[in-house]
Image 1 (cartoon, rainbow, N blue to C red):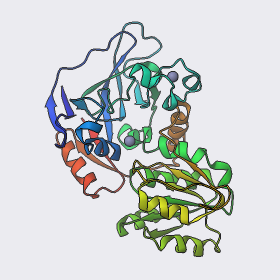
Image 2 (cartoon, rainbow, N blue to C red):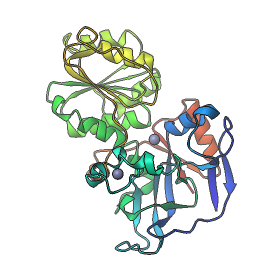
Image 3 (cartoon, rainbow, N blue to C red):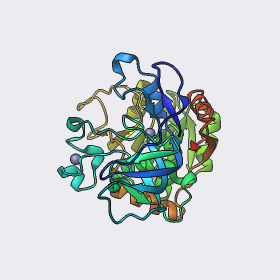
Image 4 (cartoon, protein in one colour):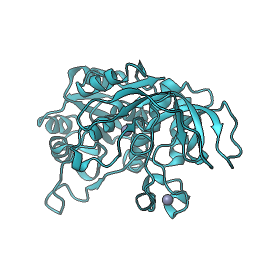
Length: 344
Ligand SMILES: [Zn+2]
Ligand SMILES: [Zn+2]
């Protein structure tokens, strides 16, 4: 079968021919219907050899959807041909966190070397993929896999981040979304459909500011040091109740901290590696800083239901598996609006 693999440190991913995998006991093989292109793929491919821990060759794709194609020994209750989305942050299924569906915070994953598809295990950018347990499949029903595959990360991650701050997003509150990319543009829509907060988007690209208001942001400002003043002016001097930072580099984290109001949440979702001062004098009183990672299994059901109620429309640009390297090039050059999706 054909697959998109990262094979050499520092080189772009390549389309290669590899053996079609067979599902082992307890596993499920999917015929892939769609796979999303994520910034974290670019991030891991930018790591120097000494920091790269995901194995080579690596079949990319941690946002996956497919139809159930073959069941491994012992797998029950799953029908061939069922259209499913793949829950990506695989855990052990046995610990306290996993028992609550929060496999993204599994306490045993590191110990047992359990790695998400596309981030250590073979991912969805191939004609077929192996899912390690039927537990990690969520039925898509009549949702279009191409349009919705990215909800497994670009929907689930902001959904989980927003849910953790819901009580601060009351009527009259202000949420700021920094970075209107794959996750940010979905975050704006989730905020609009789950809260009555005012949504302000920040981005460095003029095109993405227009995009932000197109998908539901009330206001959009250029992401620059002056943006903190702009947000305060737009909120009667009060500042943001919650800042969702989908970039989280030093510049955006400093910017976010400068626009917080007391008792606000600064939520760091992006994979940038900035740092923030904390303490009584460092930020407005009782500011909380959270750095959520991905989301829980039940939250994936919730996100898909939100999409079913047309609360979310992922803006997608479709590429074939052969053209997948081009999708990563466009992502790298900041030329994508919304999410690139690979259709094998
Ligand atoms: Zn991702
Ligand atoms: Zn676990």
